[in-house]
Image (tube, rainbow, N blue to C red; front, top):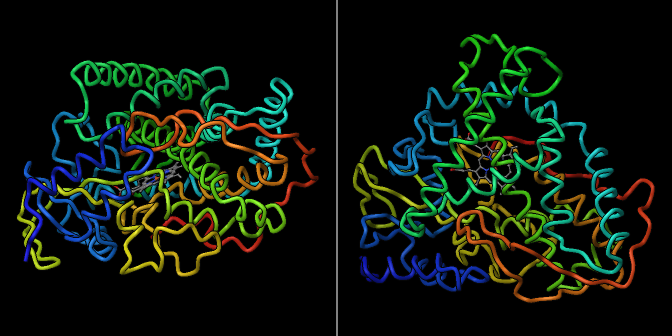
Length: 419
Ligand code: HEM
């Protein structure tokens, strides 16, 4: 039986989305979880229980179509497609993406060393973890993988930032912001069309050239699919990993024991990054719509309804995790929802894990006595892809990078692509 009224559920969700509550939306998710599946007054179904989210992520009666005309592009990316089209596009991407990231740990390690050395010699004893490390690292990695020239990284990075606001619920955005989003989309289309044309003229060894060349059983991607897929990888590759590294650093600085343990035991990086993905996930929620009535948790979500799967709420569900509000760096049995699940499970999970494990290990090993300048730090406007805008820290000194920098061994499913 439902006890939370649609109005109360809508209010709790609005509180979780409010900018003032960006540093800590978790108490609102906890209240929502008293009713794991509930309808808000605007008709959106909010799902906050771990079990219910896991079931719905794998239920073919849910479509990845977000049913929101204002947030819909003309041609959808695989993230918003359903089978069979989703599976065809995903197969093409996975086939070329996964082999390219397999041997990247050493290169990521070099990039992290270079970024830390450069910034700490400019401003000794100070670092903005977002601007100096968490942001440039994934930008460089994804641009190199895709085949975006180094000189375009800042254009590309700027566009990705502007576009991610489009993932937030539309009623949290002003008209100016929505107009700005349209403008950013148009600029992205122009940029990507130019990039594809240049690659067509001079093919290279990157992912874009590989996708252009692929003549698989379903034929090659048409230019629009190519552009949309490239745009998706670019945004997903930039704007999520930055928050994983920043949320992870913030969590470690708030838990000095975990930071000390990571310094002496770099193998801890593997379970610890999983715990950050559970405890403070970069992607807080995802959207779906129903193509049939669905009975779940004692209620019926009707056909044609909009559904929000609150991944961050499921990650703190006491029915699934013991002491869910505690950060346990070596937590076992950590089936978090940070990368989603089912057929849309994150394609970049392995890459994101590797970047975060290496970056957090380097910070723990090299910075002596790091301290937060502001707690909480200022947060970005974005509610769905949530993380600090800046993360200023001070420290006593930077130790030289060990050769080679310790990287975790025994990584679990480091480059896996299924959930
Ligand atoms: C910490 C970093 C990341 C997080 C937390 C994250 C999270 C997610 C989540 C939750 C989904 C599922 C969305 C849904 O079910 O609606 C997803 C899908 C996806 N992610 Fe990631 N992601 C990260 C990094 C990356 C990277 C680095 C890439 C690629 C370069 C990437 C590419 C994708 C793609 C292509 C999909 C769509 C898969 C599909 O629809 O089949 N992600 N990601």
